[in-house]
Amino acid sequence: MNAMVRLEHSLLAVEMEHTVHAMLDLVAPAAPPADRARVEVALVLDRSGSMAGPKLETAKESATYLIRRMGGGDRLALIKEGSDKVHRLWIGAKLVRIHHAAR
Image 1 (tube, one colour):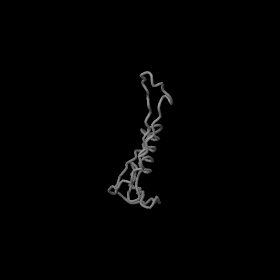
Image 2 (cartoon, helix red, strand yellow):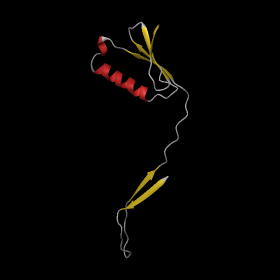
Image 3 (cartoon, one colour):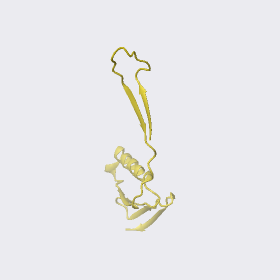
Image 4 (tube, one colour):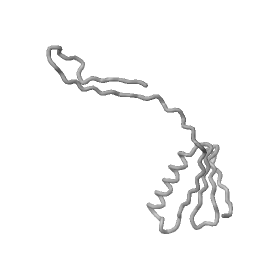
């Protein structure tokens, strides 16, 4: 851990009492990568008319946020609501493949 102290004043008269403010900056070392169990997620996206506009855009942004945080051994099944197909995105080797399979 690194620490740096910055004082409000660089010089003080020794004849009188002073209040001195200081700022302490602490820099922690980088955390080691966390070991966690593999995650398998099924994500259902409703693409019906009621989700049009900002709702659908927010759902897409949320799905993108999730995908970007998945690890190398994680898997994601994307299910479009109202469809007879399941779109599986295997995130395994950072290569995203789409497979079509009947429900």
